[in-house]
Length: 298
Image 1 (tube, helix red, strand yellow):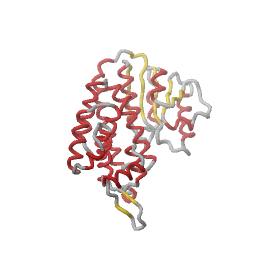
Image 2 (image 1 turned 90 degrees about the vertical axis):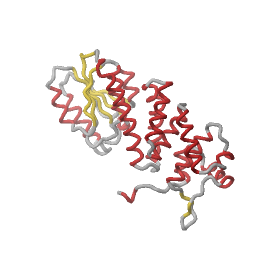
Image 3 (image 1 turned 180 degrees about the vertical axis):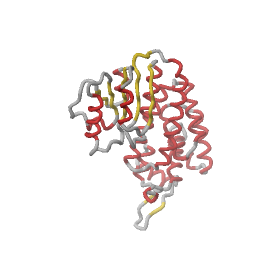
Image 4 (image 1 turned 45 degrees about the horizontal axis):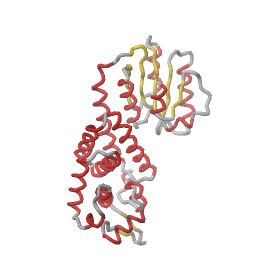
């Protein structure tokens, strides 16, 4: 597995991550020598992690009134210092997203936390999550699809965001007002992409609902415990990666079996919902394309 970890990047990777067109990156190289790519034996450009970090810092400066000609005269150390100072002082959505990218690729927890706290001066946590974290996570998803992100980078930044959700949820725990229904949230076996459903738990608690959060990788058989409860239960799961496409129909059928003659309800959200929309369901199983769609329905 270690051999598959990507440490070199193509110019297309740099375009995907930075949002700067490959053509522009080449002009910056040629005219200003801002990046000096390495070359393969067949003369194809490739870039290191240091090149990527430098480009993200350059973009951050360039988006904030620093001309490329001025940046080109800075040393590498000056570019890092100036971009970090700038990232600390701004909290506009796009710049914050760029600062989070820099923090992710440099494993810089201080930059992440400073950017986050600057945002909180202008926005509520809900606004930070919806306006900044969701678009940022969508960009991370695209970086996964284009094979430009290391697992270590994603784990680092996801854990930091998770900490913020947990912290904000904990602050709300004493505000439960509606005990008529209990929401039980979980992810399927081997599913570890938790941020979406963790945030959904936060939204439910914020609205005064009682939740039981069971987290990652839970066998469906564990839900039988709740069928004997006197509480009205609404199960919620999110299907992002698991189950794999060849198993999703049988997984959905297991859910249907669980809900036969049940007074409870079952909500399913996530990318995999499209794979089960055509399957016959029953009234107490609801499908939602996204967490925001599910929240609107509550």
